[in-house]
Image: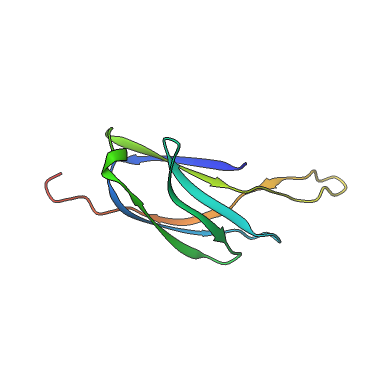
Length: 103
C-alpha cells in the first residue's frame, strides 16, 4: 500500500488536503496519526479535490505530529522495456490550522 508521511509542527484543528489520482481505477485514501484514523477514507478522483479532516488535541502530545497518508495501490501494466510501477495519489496542497496568537 503506497504510504507517504510528513512531520509538521503539532497543531490541533482543521486541515485541508487537496489530492488527485491520475490513474484508470478509483483510489481510496486516508490520513492517520500514530495509527489513529483522522481523515477518510475518501474516494480520490483523477482531478484535484479537497478533503477536510480534524486533528484532535488529544493526538497533539509532542512538538511535532506525523501525518501518514495511505492510498490503495494501482500497478501499471508492464510493457516491453518498462516494468510495472505502483502508483498512489498526488498531494497538491495541505493547509494547516492557524497557530493561536502568542503560541
